[in-house]
Image (cartoon, rainbow, N blue to C red; front, side):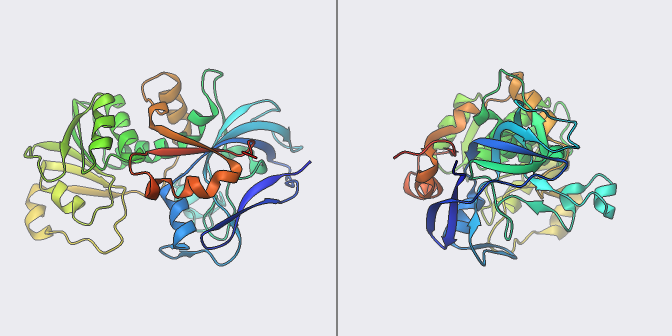
Length: 337
């Protein structure tokens, strides 16, 4: 039986290849991957071949937002069993370094993260995954919902890094998938109000349908927000948003601009603002599963397009070819031909 994967052998090209059966270690489970969400990082690796210091220098399998079914387990596996439907955390830390021992495993210098060069990702029909990266889902959750626990985790971590408290007034800049999810997390965490800002009418419409106040970038006037969640990556978004925070305001920077950001710290420091940078997440999957399964966060409405495994190239380019799109999901078990 073939184990097909969407392999990127060179920049801008995808081939469906049989990569052979995965080899499981004693604490690994073999997972049949059922759903993979497309992230902007996947598109960047596909079109540019690098993100910061991470450079694609050989064939790679993309995809890190994923969920599937456990079909076999290693001899020492105790946390999952065959048949479990699981959401997958895509990072495997060393578990022995200072950061890992302090619980900051997402900052592990030896973190093996799906689809981050040189490591392969989850656009494959079957793969071996450490059991500690697998989180069983309730039967009420779909595989697509499980896959979207990954971008939801970014939103959860952003709210934590911003020190969000019940009653806060929150401004979210950027109504992409992470921005819309971060806004929902803020509401679930007790925010008194959440305003979402973007330049695209289509995305602002989605934010309104989710029940949020909205504003076009550059047109907002309120300057009494407690928390800024910057999810756009626009060069001036962080600086502009900081001016709209009250004294003791807190910000989390999720979106990463391609160039350095200039901040008027000598003028902003009188408000004693706190800025938290966001690098992935830690300890978020149980929270994400609970938020989705309880209905407090709607991830389904973000999925605007679905693709088979051999349509991966189209999925990776969706955001560039279809402006009115939010999230693409690829089904590795399905071929269009």
